[in-house]
Length: 296
Image (spheres, rainbow, N blue to C red):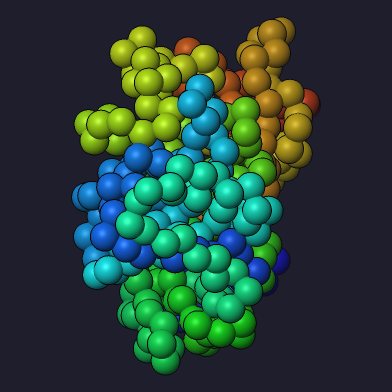
């Protein structure tokens, strides 16, 4: 990993990660707000123009079909997800669009998306736009560009640096922490923030509301800190005492902590801070993910 760029990002310097290829969509029309609000877990009506939020898309039984970011503009929404979800999630988002005054357009082959780290917004590309969004737990801006070549400001950031930042901040990712077997409330604080319990009906709402009324889920995502630079690999079983209780979904070394770390699913009773667990031969402790500004 390029530690120099990693440290520059933490100090607030400008650098860019090219996110494309991504699944990119635009939703327009007079019914766009009402329609999208009935499809996703978060409250789209509360999303002001020029802001971005995260949401899950679920089956009627509450299992995730994907997660996405939603950016509101004056008369349109821009939606984004990992490229693997382009076909399935695109079809799902368009599925109930029958008699609504709304148009759903796939931009994946004509637009590109990049993320510029740093508190200062870069210049918007011609025909595109910039929106502030702490995508990786640090100040930054998403840059939507209406051409296949993504906008790059400053140095390019490689994928391993971004993965380290994601892990340190406890941000779940589709394909690792989030799958079609995941219920959104299981995904830890990041996914809980992507759920509105007051906005009314959406696909999967009944199951998710029932989980809240029961008071807990059967598993929850936590950050685990190692006492050494070593870290467990994804797929490693997590144990408490002699009992296997969960599984690691992502692991890596945190330069800021000087230790290894991991994200893992465990039962709620094992998710309290300072709880001692084990993954393979490694002793691990449940800890809080880092927050913007943490330097340690």
